[in-house]
Length: 293
Image (tube, rainbow, N blue to C red):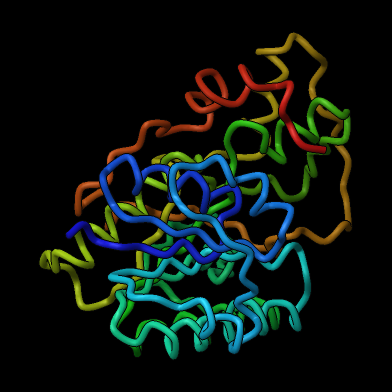
């Protein structure tokens, strides 16, 4: 009997992950909160259902036997209340519904708040300033205490999605001369490969791993914001981004750090797109017509 995996959050990353597990012969089921999203994915060769993981009763009513559960639902840009319902309470509900399944939670590298451009690893302090970050950390602890695993994702990009490229093409890219910060990202195909590895190899096959079951999922080389915009300007033969200080709050906080994925690469993760430039040339720019707004 093939192993069974539930993708709780079959969105941008979840769909790519579900596709990868299915291609490897797993029995896959995907959940999405939206009936419209479930309908859009109805042609997939695996089952996708509309299930709201913030409703414990709805989870229980749709629960079946699973070997692994990947909690990769999105807050949809919501604030602390949404984070608490979707991430923390969602994790607790999934654990209650699937107590024997191996659980993976996709957290965020935003839990690291280092500001001096230093390298950070999974052993570095993760003490978020914001309530949303603290909720992520609480969710991580719930998952780890259950025997699960945590993947801290960098900024997600890929076909149809790149905040750097979108802002550059819209003429909204601003370089703050007082703070040229590092960007830590991961292509959604590489994220899917990381989740497959962590569940299928590290998790269910119980390969020897460090006691701390947290893994950073980021490109091999963090890139300075100025370097990224200068590269895009050269590639598209457009003027450089305007240089202006900005007080606008950043979605992932005011941190400035270089996140290392050495631990994950040490257990066999091989990136298809190891750098920002490679991903842009091979995957993102060829799909400009799908770039979100």
